[in-house]
Length: 75
Image (cartoon, rainbow, N blue to C red; front, side, top):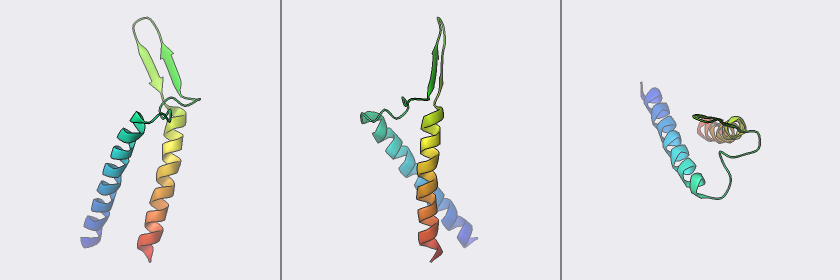
């Protein structure tokens, strides 16, 4: 049970750090969420936003971070 607890704490910290970084990135002029390839459909009474490229970019970044963490904790 000790290993599962450690893993949950690590994942929790990763989620908190990711959330804080996303809040900070919102304020920077990086265009995160408004990248080419993100779909925005505006009609008269509704708006649909599908952040495809942003999701792929965040997925790649998180995959790299998690792989580095697992590599560090494996030793």
